[in-house]
Length: 480
Ligand code: SF4
Image (tube, rainbow, N blue to C red):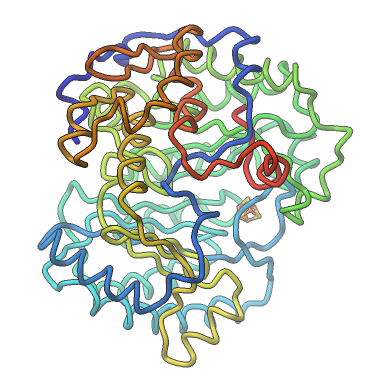
C-alpha cells in the first residue's frame, strides 16, 4: 500500500496540532501495544520453530530478491540496573561475560547469514540492548568485522548503522572510534537530568557528560542523533521535567523520544525497587505529557506520532510529510519494511510473512548455539487476517491515512464488510475528533495523532475480551 498517494497531509510538519483535552486523553488511556509489529510479541509462540524460520527466509529471498536487509544485534549486558527498565538485559560486571557472548554471536552470525541470498546488502544495522557500549570499541569492531565477513554490509552514504549509547559507558573521544567503525547514527539514553530523579531510578549522568558525547558524535560525522526521555518517573514534577526539557532542547538532538513510564513491577523485576509513593499521580503525569509536547513543539520539533519528535529537516519529519513513514521494532523509521535478521539473545526478526524471536534467556541462547543450532525459539507465521490487519495498523500508525481501495485491491476484501464492527467502534473516535471516516478511507486528524495506538487498537484482533483485560493490564503499558 502506498499511503502517500491519497494522504491529505492533514498533519504536515508545519501544522502544530493541539493535543486532545485531558478528558479525551483519559477516555482513551487504556493499556495497549506500541505496534512496533502486528501481531505483537505476546502472540509469538513456540509452535513456530527453526524449520519455519528457514522456510520464511527462503520465501523472503524469493519475494524480495536482491532487496536490502536490516540487521538487529542485541547486546544484553548492563553494569547496573536502571530501576525503570523493562528491557531484556543481563546485569553483570564480569569482564569475561562479553567475550563469552561474542563467541556465541559469532556462531549465530555464521548460521544465519547463509539463509539470506548473498546479493542482499545490509543497509540498516542497529546495535541495541541492554548496553551495546558495554562492549569496548575494539570488541564492537571485531563484531562488525564478523558481520562484514558473513553479510554484505553496505558502504553507501544512505545506509543507517546506528547504536544505542549509555553515556556512562563511553568517553567523548570514543565517538570517533564508533564513527570509524562505520556507525553513522546514535541514540542517547537520557531519561531525565534531574539529580534526585536520577538517584531514584539508579541512573546518574550529568548534562555535561551527554553534551560532550553529542558534540563529539557530531564532530565525528554521526547524524540523526536521538535522545530518549521518560516521563512519569519517581520524583518528577512539571518544574523539574521542564528543566530537563530545556536542557535537551539546548542539546538540539535531531530526534527525541519521550516515553511514558509504564510501572509493571510484577513483570519487570528492576521496577520493584521503584518507590511507588514517589511516582507522580495520574494528573501530574498527564501534565508532564502536555508539558513535553508543548515544549518540544515550541522549540521547533515536529510531532511524528505517539511519543516521537524530530527536527523539520530530519528524515523522519520528511517521511511524515511525504507519507512514507514506516514502523519497526525501534519505533518510527524510514525503512521499516526491510526483512530484519535478529541476532543475539531475545532478538526479534521479521522475514517475509513471519516474526521470530531468539531464546530470551542467556543460558538457553548459549545452549542452542553450543549445539550448533539456530537460537530461534518462537515466532508467528502471519495468516491472511494478520496480514490485512498488519497493513491497516501500519497505515494508521504511520501515514494516518487508510485508503480502503488499496487495502481491498491488495487483500481481496470489501473493507466496509470486513471491518464493519471496527468501523462502528470508530464512530466514537470520529465524534471525538480523532478520525474522519470518509467514503474513500480513514483519516487520522492532527489531534488523533496523539492517540494513534488507541485508534490502531480498534483493528487488533488479538486484544482481549473484557474478561481477560486484567491479564493484559499487566502485559502492556498505558497509552499515557
Ligand atoms: S535502561 Fe538500558 S542501561 Fe538501564 S538497565 Fe535497562 S537496558 Fe540497561
